[in-house]
Image 1 (cartoon, rainbow, N blue to C red):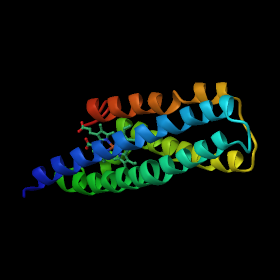
Image 2: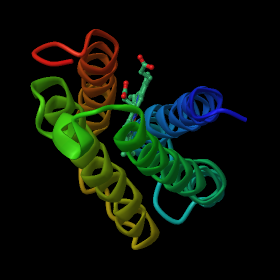
Image 3: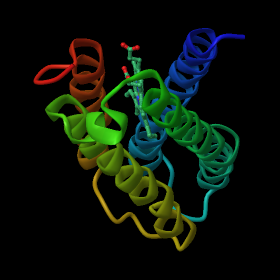
Image 4: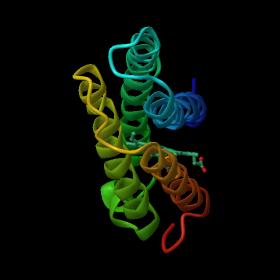
Length: 156
Ligand code: HEM
């Protein structure tokens, strides 16, 4: 397989992992919103929600984040070999936007995964409206990141 073919394969796998990660990032706060407004702490419904939320974190969110990240690192490694400017592309404006988005999504991932602890302790740390409104944040970040990598503005 040529370097270019390997790059295209890893890029496709990266995009698939990112789709799964985004699905989990959009699903979990939505479950929290329904959990907060419909399930009394300690009820059977509360326990169901906690089980579903745990599954989203363990089966979708965590593996997808690790895969998207590792495949993204793989793309950086391959990019260094494909281009003459070596590591220079990492400092270009489009890549800085992409990396800022990555930092934000990793932070948000941990923030929402940690919020499970509050539900497990019978607390409702935020109203349903908070989860509904902040649920748009990962998608806004994704728009900026995808446009940054597809246009490569300010570089290349
Ligand atoms: C988790 C950490 C991530 C790292 C380290 C990473 C890194 C990279 C790198 C180095 C490329 C190749 C850029 C190029 O040379 O054109 C790339 C491509 C891409 N990334 Fe990521 N990425 C990450 C997460 C994400 C996320 C969260 C999204 C979307 C929300 C995303 C969307 C894309 C897309 C759509 C491409 C293909 C761009 C194209 O071929 O035109 N990535 N990524």
